[in-house]
Image (cartoon, rainbow, N blue to C red):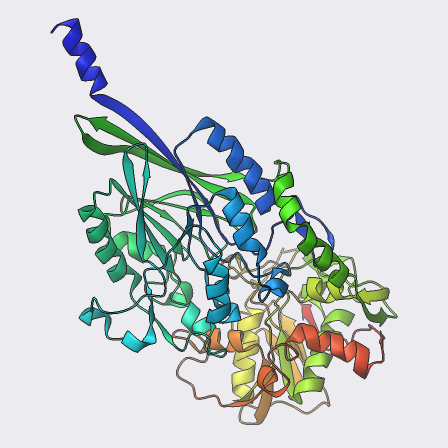
Length: 552
């Protein structure tokens, strides 16, 4: 072969590298700032992600940037849901995102609000499996006349390579918004079936690789089929890559049925980085390798341009955070640990007594419950500011809904909560969390008010709750009827298939968001109102000592 022919062969064969960067579940972390604690938090933010993205773009021109959802809720950014120019579209537009897929929390503010926010995003908004209810029908009878809320897929071309991208939102969103009615005019369909349809379409349009951007975790949620991308990967091996989200897991790389999967944790702490290598030979394009990892951003400096965009919003949030609500006369959470766990998880504290007092006061329930979001809650003697309320009770939408239960149903619920801890054995010196329960997205250790009880960790599963009685000393029997106030989301979780209330008819008697208001009926706002208007700005902050963990 002549040198000329060799040169011609080399010219007809080349490699192209495409890098996809994915973020998910940033939850309002635009600045490197925690507004609940009112302090800098360099663990992650869009400002730091922007710096990382700029560095990567200098090294590789073939970049695709995707956001997997849950961007507009938490860290107080929800306070801007109704403003004419929401900050998140401004941030995503500046950073040059190509794709946005709504997460379940994007639906928290109603569809007109979400549509206004999406309108300002100058990128591809995708979700293949959400339709208007006007055309809802059995998924096996798919009609081309059905109208989606957003586009299902798009082809993004880089250096002659066509990447087909499909967006999916978690079908669990419909259940999460059941009480609000925000999704009553919409209908989620099978992610698997929709993905198959879109792959056929994208392949016909010349896609060289298929990437699914899914606001879904890897495993099924609450054991419901097709709510995790593992089911999707097993059913549709034609997918090359899935960038997942929703479950707040750091998944650098996982292969299921030949499908590469990655998930970038939460709160902007990591970015998923997918590398696709293509070979082009005589106009034939082949994907010859794929790899992924997650990259931490904690050491990146915040992008000053992002800070400039968000500065007016940041200043407003700082003012709100420092509004005085009242004061407490005592430290409300002991600083010492008890056999390896926080006092807040080991015994009744001034803080848990306060929160359950609030729930009992507004609801009139016999028994109430709530859960912290983490161990390191704190509220020291002195002024209470709005940020202290939000820091210690993180669930902005948390409510109190009263259910009519029997004593047995309450006991079953309390045993479920107590199983957040492992049974201890001879020789143990510390209490241990159940690894499966503690590894879930949210804390599932519920604390109860209106009752006295002990959690004896020497006992096996289902028998940890002892000495259970109402605070007036009345014994709780299996058949007695009780008004139990709890977060509606928690009840729905326990009433689903496989839950402790699965198949049981448990009537709703009252709901704080209906009786008091969608905003005023949240636990956070009831806590504030209780301090200001019921306690005239001063709470004692002492524990009722109604419960504790025992065994060591």
